[in-house]
Amino acid sequence: RLLARHPILLDELTRTAASFTATDWAEERRLLAGECAALGDDTERLMDLLRHFKQRHVLRLSIADVEGELPVMALSDELSALADLLLDVVLGFAGRAVFGGDGLSPPPGFAVVGYGKLGGKELGYGSDLDIVFLYDESRNDEAEKLARVAQRVNTWLTSHTAAGVLYETDLRLRPDGAAGLMVSSFPSFRDYQAKRAWTWEHQALTRARYCAGDAALGERFERLRREILSAPRDGAKLRAEIVAMRDKMRGEVKADSRDLKHVAGGVIDLEFAVQALVLAESGRHPSLLDNKGNHQLLNRAGEMGIVPKEVAAAAAEAYLALRARTHAASLNDEEHPLLAEGELAAERAAVQALWKAVFG
Image (cartoon, helix red, strand yellow):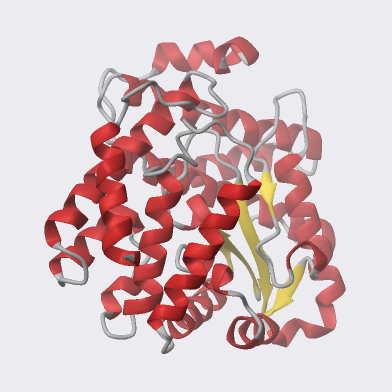
């Protein structure tokens, strides 16, 4: 599909190495910066350049994936690093449009936080980017301009050009959701998380991380994330709220009962179980605060005896199988992959055993 839409990538196909080597993203950033500099401030051509850059790398990664040279987690690491790089580049151009400058570096005191699959470094080929924009309180007087930066970032990502779209985005995880401000000062974000956020928003925070922009602000965010997640909670109440949210989702989603994401023992069930473990246990087990992905967190929970080790290990391996199926579906242009009769039955049973161990 990618080649059909963008024949220019055929040249990349002929240059792809016989065996995959991990990407030097710092070097790729340097090379991309040179290509961008040659285009000056021609926004349309810069947008197309970034889209072709992404498409070349996705093609290279998909070839390695199909040939079995790239494990599931390594593939997602690469796709997530690609997204981080492009977010940082786009943020630089958005900052230039509002504040001036050369566009080679993002504006100070402004950061992009990734949630969901981006935040957990578990991106797939067609994943949206769940992002939140934060700014340092030292820039309160420029809040309106920073909101324009955020809007321009979103436009750069989502605009449809001759080269396609860079990424679809979801900005609804910001404080107060779609009704909230496009950008949040760090103090207002901190207060929201501490005083007004719902349990499901803290679930989302388990998979959040700094992705682009001001690194010092990113470090402040990570310290806050750990503080919020490790706060004391009533375990029984927490689990009841998460189960209620999962039941509500099942009632609201009009999906086929075989849908890989929503099926019993599917991806969402596993993610909710891991999020419950982080929120309930990270105060006593700080290593669960590390944003290392569901697979590693499950294994840690098993090693620490929070859930039976064999249950955690089986669920962790099941998660890899579910993710591999998701990647394959994306390559085959399946928007909502459906499981065949009996497909991944053992893996789904492992996830259901985890659910029982966590929620009873």
